[in-house]
Length: 94
Image 1 (cartoon, helix red, strand yellow):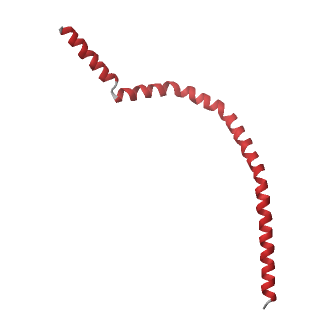
Image 2: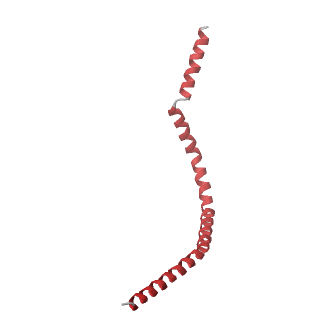
Image 3: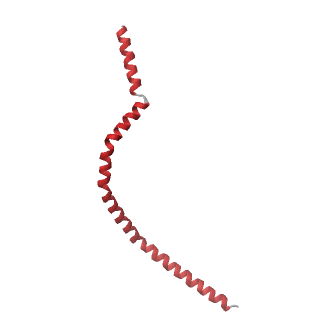
């Protein structure tokens, strides 16, 4: 019966140690240390693809936005024309 108690106590101690937060942090640090070089290589390999896709996407958005720029330009020209007309009318009434 004594050896069963020692085994249970030992098992409980191992379980407590295995679930200790510092052990978890150590294991996490080890995992990151082992996998980080590979992740960095993947990121470096993907960077040109991402950059090219981002550039293409940004250029397309600018081209799509040109419709709005032309619309704003037209509205500004109308506003200037109305302002000039109002200024001319105001000077004519003096």
